[in-house]
Amino acid sequence: MKYFLIGTTLLVSILLIVVVVAQESKQPGMGSAISGGAEAVAGGKTRGKDAVLSKFTVVFGIIFAVLCLVLGRYMNTF
Figure 1 (tube, rainbow, N blue to C red):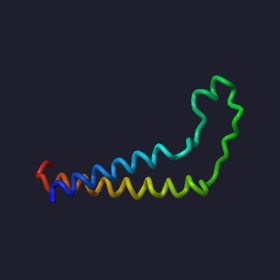
Figure 2 (figure 1 turned 135 degrees about the horizontal axis):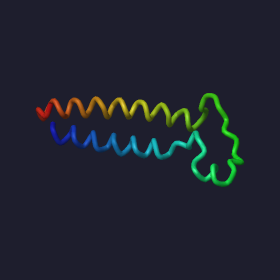
Figure 3 (figure 1 turned 60 degrees about the vertical axis):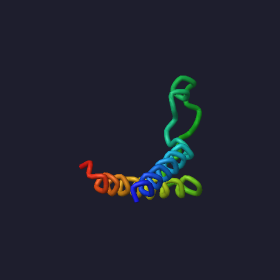
Figure 4 (figure 1 turned 135 degrees about the vertical axis):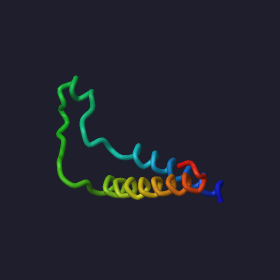
């Protein structure tokens, strides 16, 4: 049981990292401050791929937090 929880937590953490890295930046970085910021930043709701990735980020984050709490309780490390 312990190894199953550890493996699941590891898998969810890797998926969470991949989903966060796959999202596009909502703000211009330092490069736009130096080069004059020619890109226009559009406000509003995210659509398409970013909306799906944003939902997956929330879901994986919640699953990761719950798994960490369960694993900590199971191993009596609280």
